[in-house]
Image 1 (cartoon, one colour):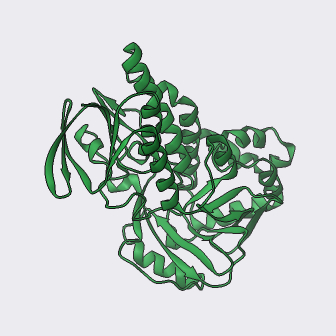
Image 2 (spheres, rainbow, N blue to C red):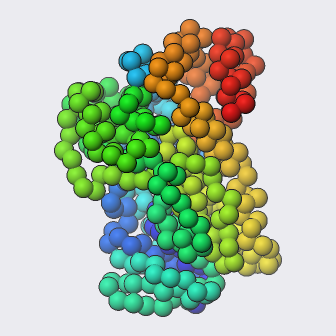
Amino acid sequence: MFSVCIVGGGPAGLKTAIDCQARGWETVVLEEHPEIGKPVNCTGIISKSGVEEYGISLDDILVNPIKGANIFSPSGEKLELRRKLDVAYVIDRAGLDKQLAKQAEKAGAKIYTNTKLLNIRNESIFIEREGRGELLKAKLLVGADGPNSLTRQIMGIQKTRNDFAHAYQVRVKGNFDPSMVNVYFGPFAKNFFGWSAPESREWTRAGIATSELNVKSNFELFMTQKNLRGEYCDMCSSLIPVGPPMKDIVKENIMLVGDAAFHTKATTGGGILASINAGIAAAKAIDGHFKNKKPLKDYLNYLKPLYKELELHWKIRRYMNSFSDRDIDAMFAKMKRAGVEGFLEQHGDMDKPTLFVNKMVGNPRMWGMLPELLKFMRS
């Protein structure tokens, strides 16, 4: 019998496995695809501060360093946020998963690829492995199985299509500023945005996310408007959890972590570092449960710092979704006049909005944004 069975071989599941196995708890990871890291359904941008905080090695996974972002309103008004030093990295997303998988196996965890979860009954885990039905035994099960989590469904938690943004992304060849990510607001990306994340001067990862179902036709509109050309593919679409981080993520001997628990930034859809953070918290709770019979729901206590940030990301997203394209244009004009570009260059943090929101309220330079800040605080 395993101590812990983890469903999903992404950053959330693998980090949970690394930390559980390092504490001496026999762990197995179930990955439904034949290869860890494939297919890739992520732009793969992580902050420099996050890389340093979690000790992520960029060896063999660094694609391109990023110094800032150009953010465009629907009418084309631009906010330019640029620093002299790197603030983020475009990475080989599959490479990161493989790196974490090697760490998990080195710690002693087992990884079963081509393995699907079928059902859970107490400590019995019903799976399909290499096309054959099997039974595993594990004291605890961790669902790290992404936006469409079967584990979450088995727990009796239902989510609807409205709880997700629909994303589509391809690689595009052209001529790009390799140091800057471009972000585009417009009718092609209702309640979200389009992006171009450069891999080099010649290649970029271009995509959109939207609350609308017809993501592919919206993507075609985006590509036409921004004069981008890319090859389309059937595997380039995905779902992004967009909502507050879930609270009901522990039930009996089952836990949720990562995208399955909405551990994503609702502002950008990014979830790599949040998932790693949540995996660390899950392993702490599991260790305390096995060693000292502490309740698994201590997991939520360990998640409090992360949830403080994710809940603010959700509040910002919900506030932005109340804006029309005309409202966004007007907001950009006010932000330019208030000097928001310089302020965000100095204080902005793509992972931790709590670090700069309070500074905005207390900074006289930002008082030109006071009506919008008051509306946001009341939202």
